[in-house]
Image (cartoon, rainbow, N blue to C red):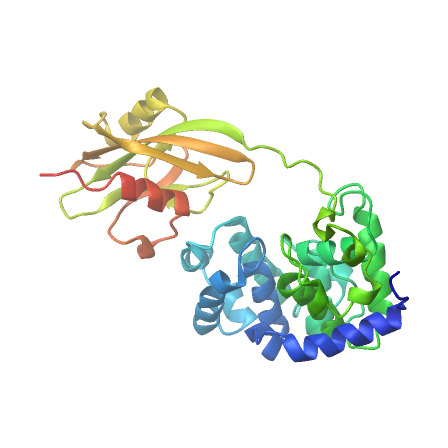
Length: 350
């Protein structure tokens, strides 16, 4: 039988554990509001180790919120290239612009929720870590920890969402630790100990008060609804090279990859021919180069890649409001999909 543990004791044990095991993340070591904002945006759906170099580069180039707000969005997208989910970069830039216009980031959750790209989790994280507000946070790690502690029935990201937020709110209010310590400790516990497939229950400060820890299989929580399979879509792309080793890029003005550059791409070969005719005046001679499979959040693209040479004039057409010849991907904001298309459609011989 598991021993009783009240919410105050949970908070005390969590803070003690966090003090001994917390990773030295830069936005923890120097939790200025701008630093916390950057860290939270960059680690949404991205591993911390992947995000850290981007975090340091952003701070090196735009040391303050005012600097980021004054930057052209194209430069922000270029610096973000490779991190994925580019809507985050556009939202981050717009958050900076709006926050500077109103005198700084809001301190409370309602004010933060009024800014683009900031949902309940990010608002709670910024409010508690940067401003010391005693508010809850629930991300994937917290969902998992709390679902196991209370043996939550239902999907914490779906039908049981309100229940898991209620538990998180109750715990942060009762905790004797600072809200920053409590919330970051809870997230760290899920990341380092209460892992999805191999929870280290003996290392957990809440083991004696956890319902899942006494069950035959703690990983049965959280109770997740079946994942939605991505919708299969097809496409066709042409990588056109000039004599200087540069490839033709179009700048998407709207849609999923708005603000990014890529080789001309359309829904199928017929539509691609029409797009190339509009961009080049004729359809350049092409040869097949291969297939690229790329998964967006809810879509799986299978794209046929062709390659060819072109030395004539080009002009914007179709979804592209600008065109340019690109020598290095770092010259502009290039999506991960575009990099893969260019790799498969490498320069033709001769």
